[in-house]
Length: 197
Image (cartoon, rainbow, N blue to C red; front, side, top):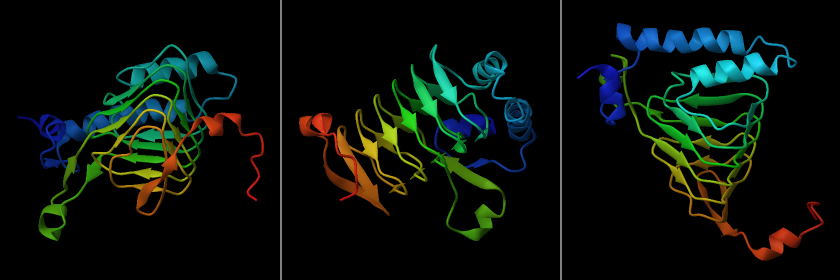
């Protein structure tokens, strides 16, 4: 079993020294280097590079500003996806994002984790657990999503949240570590005052 097959199974794998892993990561970095240097007017080339990089995309998507990932081929995005500036996805394992998802600036989706003991960590070993984000999810600025998390449909993750456990559908989730604040209700669809009073 090669190192990327181990990663896909959630096993410890050599993320830092294995030649095949490093070459796959470098292939992604080459595309990202081109992508992140494009003018905002070069939409067709930008979208072509995203389609080349990612495992699956919808027809309509936007990556605003800088984007970084490990491999790209483990990332799947649905229809009407929007990522604001500085999205980082460490995709040693699958990251599957549903339809109509909005990701605010400076968000990190991290499938990668490391052994607690320094001996194995110093050998470059890590593990990766998949992240799944449902449909109609809004992830606020500065959110960090940890390995193995599933975010349910219609959830809203508040800015600055550290998501260490699964998020139920249709809730506001906030804090460090994150927790359910309340359900999203029909009244939220009628709200017209968005001040912080």
